[in-house]
Amino acid sequence: MTLIDTRTPNPKSFISGSTGDWEVVIGMEVHAQVTSESKLFSGSSTQFGNPPNSNVSFVDAAMPGMLPTINEECVRQAVRTGLGLKAAINKRSVFDRKNYFYPDLPQGYQISQFKDPIVGEGVVYLDMPDGQIEIGVERLHLEQDAGKSIHDQHPSMSYVDLNRSGVALMEIVSKPDLRSSEEAKEYLGKLRTILRYLGTCDGNMEQGSMRADVNVSVRKPGGEFGTRCEIKNVNSIRFAGQAIEYEARRQIDILEGGGKIDQETRLYDPKTGETRSMRSKEEAHDYRYFPDPDLLPLEFDDAFIAKLAEGLPELPDEKKARFVGDYGVTTYDAMVLTLDRETADYYESCVAFGGAKRDGKAVANILNADVAAFANSQGLAVWETHIKPSQVAGIVDLVAAGTISSKGAKDLLQVIIAEEPEGEPAEIVERRGMTQVTDLGAIEAIIDEIIAANPDQVAKVLAKPTMIGWFVGQAMKASGGKANPQALNDLMKKKLGIE
Image (cartoon, one colour):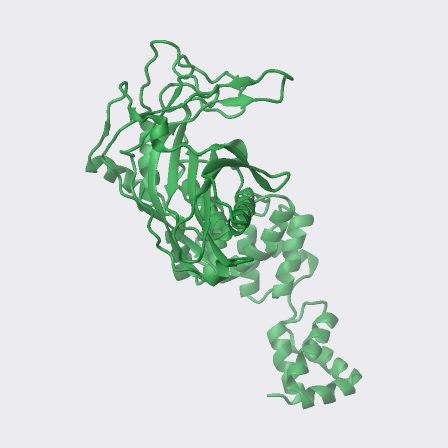
């Protein structure tokens, strides 16, 4: 592809070297396993975790005379992904043979797509601290995965597991638009979120169903693109960031020492935090691409694409904008709530439980703070905890009615978390005597006692009214946290003669 620079250099992303600042340029080739029960060209299962070589047909093992047959569901999933990336869908695409030898590639070639991919240019939007940026998608093509070589089970031999051989992959190729490890991590996370919303890939990087080849080069800010090195098969967003930072520094050190960068494929070792050379980087002509003679071109019409577009779910960017507009939450809260589809659904269930429409900001505050803290401590997502939407809704309703204070809401949630997981909020509040004190007479008595006992503090507050918070805090403490904060604050000001 022709490289086009779309970004204005940002000094915040520069890397300091002995000869001045440098800029890293990053492109991604993400391999996402298509959500499908069978492989791209055979009926073999794609079930993860089955015994080695149990998901293998004669086609996958490249037995003589076996011919591939396209899996239509994989084609649909690729088109749906392209639509989710706001990309052009090519109504005619061609499968090619990519020729290379490797022990876990039984055919001696990989069936992929080269000049005519199924999906063309698209875009992924990233929300970064300095604002939203666009990362271009160059293409998405379908291809079959290879098997897996296993080198640690015998002192002198390697084993081959062909369970993954022939599994359908979408290779999503970005443009070289990323300029920092943080942007790269955000891109991988956002892409994974989109795929999961669409249901076209589960995004489970630890299982190998999503992995990235990361292309890294460095240059003087705004200069010509440098020679890139590809870091192969990175299976963690965190590792991707670490690999980029190490590789960028390695290249800068070489260039500042008077050397040159060799275009090559490298591997990242998370144990050492370093990349190491794997092989020289092949070019397209090295693979001797040619159209696969056993597969006809894929051809479909506008009606096929339109039908798939109609079935798309609401995607993260659209959902985030709706949450901000409909529920009045902050952009940050909306981003957190839409990181996965299940959390977004859980949030809306809390807001609308029982047919009501609660304060969306109040619900977001509970979920993104105390519920999220509990979920993180358990290694769970918010929606995976035992806290039910009805309980969150009940807490918000009690606060809105003035039955409990915001502190009381926190205490009530802790009771539900640790003591009464099936408890109903209103019943717990009544039984445990957690109701907020709104009796002005009772609150006044507390205030009078504190004022009488602290004449020195009274003088300080009269001299500096902003110190009234000390009195409010003491009064809340004396009430056991049950006093209505607004009533207490207003009455305290009146007693002290502060406007």
